[in-house]
Length: 288
Length: 314
Image (cartoon, rainbow over all chains, first blue to last red):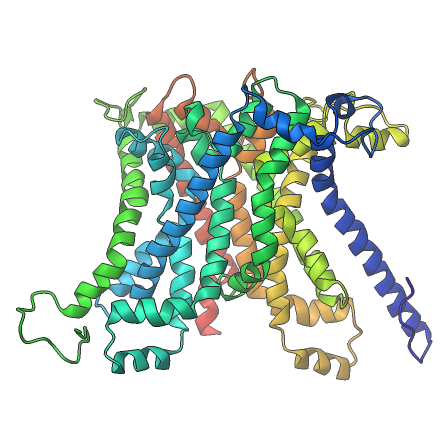
């Protein structure tokens, strides 16, 4: 590909053009490098097992085995369907629950005048300073004393109260045009109806952004499901995959197909809602 | 239809709690209760447990004072896991920062296919550490017989390398660092892109009038200083995330025989202490408290150092 030529062709101009060409080469090379792992996932998932472990490694497998997918779901040693279902239930419930609790709280903190609203807000953002992973020991202690180990409750409920989601939504509601709400107030709507009829429908983009981030986080989360999902029946897809890589002997092609299957929902969500994630990041205030 | 506003107090009910207060707690209450129960209660409980000898129990009786803390701090495995983390973050934070900023600068200046490149670099963020670790461990950096890295290096006549089980030289660091770079660079690139798009074009025009050459000069005197707040946020997030490293270490290095003694970040160590064979929740809690304190100190120190609180004064 040639770079668009300009009228002047001094040494400066040549330098700029060379720089631009170099930038493109680096960008394309990096993009290919970033795509290689995805390619390997699909390649190994559709290859025969000996194509994965062969010392004569080739870029393309000899033949594509689409039957690997069926084989994976038919294999009684691999609780694939169950762990996918668990992950889906957890991710959907966590997303819906987080949006509900965090948006109500975010709206209350942003819009309902209350003497101690600031103190409550500080208590919320204080939890952002506590990395979730550091609290896994105490949280495990709490959840196990509630008797929730290896239950969907134990996997979902403790994750529903996200200081991050509340913070982002509160920031958004704070910047929400007051006039719209004033109009609703004049029409005789209380906080509750104003929230559901005016605010929520107008805040769809931020819900999509926060929801996507929460969904991806819940689907990919590993440490908490590993700690709480101790029975095979409560494994999420991440825990199942990890168990195969670290402990059990499993067919490699099945493992790769399982991994590929596990990222399909996310890649779809991701490509469909990417612009909301970008917008959400821009509005979250974390870089302001 | 009632109007819960402060301006018109309802005369009918005795107002022990004002309407706004009531509505505030209806909205905020469930979330605040959940947050208290699942964040603050575990934290306090953890502090409580850390003063007890708590093997296999969450309601211990043997008070040991700071015994768990001194035991943890004298435990060579725990302190070396803290050192491991420090080395890891000293490397991964600048590396991710540089890669994310570089990607953002290049993608930002690309007119055609900008959305395509952005998606490609951002897409790994949709991949879990478990899946990425699987690809890294069993395909790219797998054993001595097969795998992409050894195949490509073989073309240049290099010897086969056992990436994950060689401790001298520590090739496993290359595996661990590249997987994290791949997974998280795109997300931080997005933050930088957002920051870049906020820089006023006038600044660049003014720089051009003043004779600044496009490229390094403009980057050094305009772009980089304008990205200051974004940079602070990125570095803070990177450090906090590095402290939480668990998934890729666990998935890349552990196998049926357990976890190797090298390359052990604090959370992996805590996981095995609290939930492994011994179920030593007292020690695990003490470790979690120590780690939380370290993170808090580092975060506050960083925020001060970067002048996060100074924004209003500027």
